[in-house]
Image 1 (tube, one colour):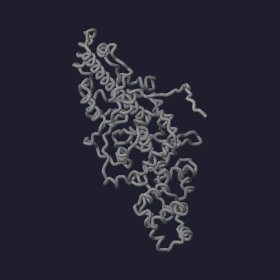
Image 2 (cartoon, one colour):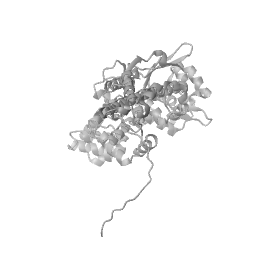
Image 3 (cartoon, rainbow, N blue to C red):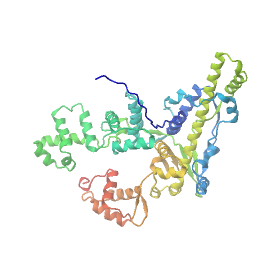
Image 4 (tube, rainbow, N blue to C red):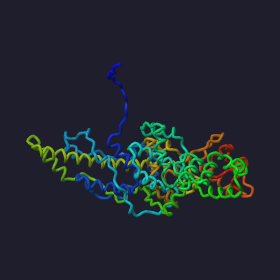
Length: 502
């Protein structure tokens, strides 16, 4: 049968980020230490970009009480700080004239610049400090651009213990809905297998069982009889293993007492929380954190928020480039080919510089309105510093208050820190779910978890409390939650069941 070539037409709607949007997203994710180096590199690369004066403290400080009134009077959201984002000057528009071309895509927008590792910073020990180390390992792998994006998202989705608790199907939905990145579970599975090869062993596992299996498989003695038996216990007799039913394991595997003792010793060497051990792997290094915000609370209850600009100067378009553009513009009717090329080069450099300036201002604007909304929603904490005063708050709450997209709030909260009168905190620390009681009262999850943790820490270790008893005690403290909720919070805190706490 002869083959035929058939041509068909189809209509497909796609959404593509503009170069300006790509730049804004990348600058938004950068902490201030990285931004400083990024601006320096841009000034070196683009002669049309010049340093102006440094940002003044007056420009960066905002009174939280004044801005809260602006929100409540309907002037909140993006418009509350519209003065932070200014359009290109009339002088620049006139100079560019009809040479501006929105279809040109500057190559520099897609470049990655090295980070600055020599910043003056505040030492801040953090159990999730393995994030940057994971990205360094990722950069050593041969990945496509999409695989790198998926890898970064998987790393960002890891829990504090280094495990991946969210199903891959959920992550695929999040990528498509919030980040406009259609992704299949199979693609995520492929990238996850690469992530699970990173150090420390067990990173990226989707369960404790898989975490232990990965560590045993990665052991250079995996093919020895001892390791094979250890792997069989974790794989085939996992339920008996978690309930410490070693007598049944010994009977079914026909092990001697000496073998059981040796296997128990080997399994105890495995790490159920590989993410928390990253500090040990890198030699107890401290994560260097430069706070992006400084929030000060005065004795009279006034809250002042300052955006830390670090060494980032005010930027402007070079006057010399504008003069060159005007000179060429006056005689463009009689220009030679080389002069036209020079004109195009000058125009492109000025346009790139203006895009970068606008992106820096947009970043400043977005960070400011996001931090201001968090202060407004968590005002009792910033006044008193008591963790128990934190209210239930999710990304949607801040998004609705600022008028920004949820994905934008997520990017800000995942990479920024705030210095307060009571210490330095990552922004995501202020977010927590809430539990609504039958009478409609909303209680922060963290508040219940702290109460649960306190009860368990003070229990008789010889007679640990069951979940049922813990539920009754929490109810007496004013937390009317169900037993299954207690079990859920206990697992989130990494606390085992009563029989394993003896």
